[in-house]
Amino acid sequence: MERFLSEGKGRGLQARKEFAIGELVFTCPAYTHVLTVNERGNHCELCFARKEGLAKCGRCKLAFYCNVTCQKADWPMHKLECSSMSKFGQNWNPSETVRLLARILVKQKMHPEKTPSEELLAVSEFESHLDKLDNEKRELIESDIAALHHFYSKHLDFPDQAALIELFAKVNCNGFTIEDEELSHLGSAIFPSVALMNHSCCPNVIVTYKGTTAEVRAVKEIHAGEEIFTSYIDLLYPTEDRQDRLRDSYFFTCDCRECATKAKDKEKLELTKYGEPPKPEVIKDMIKYARNIIEEFRRAKHYKTPSELLEICELSLDKMGSTFEDNNVYMLHMMYQAMGVCLYMQDWDGALRYGQKIIKPYSKHYPAYSLNVASMWLKLGRLYMGLEHYSAGAKALRKALTIMEVAHGKDHPYVLEIQKELEGK
Ligand SMILES: [Zn+2]
Ligand SMILES: [Zn+2]
Ligand SMILES: [Zn+2]
Image (cartoon, rainbow, N blue to C red; front, side):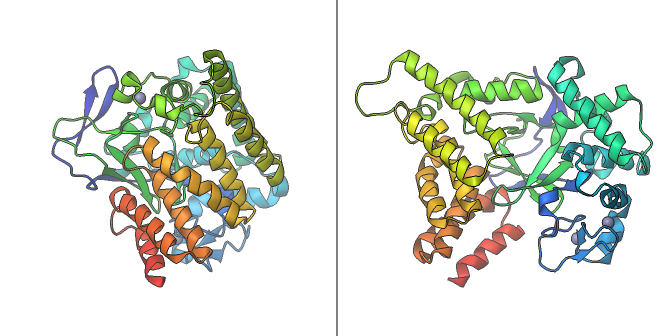
């Protein structure tokens, strides 16, 4: 593939040859990356390997590694936080963006020439959309900059304020989050070459991660001369919601086939079949309510107890159920949240009940190869297995594998692990 100028989209990535479904298009090692605080001890800080018995950093006792080799290689980055975490204790709370940005500053200093991660696009070429930032976004960046100075001043020389604002804006538009096979958040990273790809709501590739390397695989047949598109967002939602999200986070309006035809919107917003069909203003009000409750729940997750959260889910599902069918995406969103709370509370039966309701409509709303669908099959499969429903479990795990063998590749550690889970039963 090669970089080219995509009509109306600026630069993009174009295929120079055919790619079959499941074929690896390219890989990109992380320019820099950071493990999320909640996964400390589960994954190596350097290579993101997931295993038991990782070795602790003797100084802070908060960073964990496969071995001394990983620890030594990570020191230029970990040094930024090691003594600072001990010094600030409970008050050490920079955002993950701040942590990632500190590492970018170190990387730029250590490696000023082009890195292997920048083969197709350099960090210095990232789009910042600085002129489009509203006050709210500017203030968020300014508070991140304050935290950067507060927690990282000992080991870093900072560029001036204007340069820092621009760098934060670039990271906000071009940064990636790394997730595991169940879509749990593992960390954040910069993959410059991957950031070259434009967005489509009907993407022809999927990005997955092997350790801290991004892998891009075809999920549709791609012909020579075609542009390569990934999706920047969750594709569950109807066109208007996707467009809002893309405008707010990435400052453009999508003109993909799905956005032009809105072909899936009707199914995604399916109305209840009981009684009289709901009136247009009732539908409009309920969509507004749904969007609000989604936002309210997102915030509530930070301070409410699991049982309070579950109550929000149940009440909103009850209310929306008067207008929406169960496979309506707003219903599915709240069921998915409820399933997450059940998993957190180790209420396996509750989680299973929600998962069973979600999976069929999920498969319909998402594209054929979707990490959201694969991870839902996987969670279901593991729940069934745990509850000793072995044949249902095996069936679900095989469904997950069918998608993951294409999206992750047949030799990905996650795929091999699931194959082992299948052989065990
Ligand atoms: Zn390691
Ligand atoms: Zn340490
Ligand atoms: Zn679109």
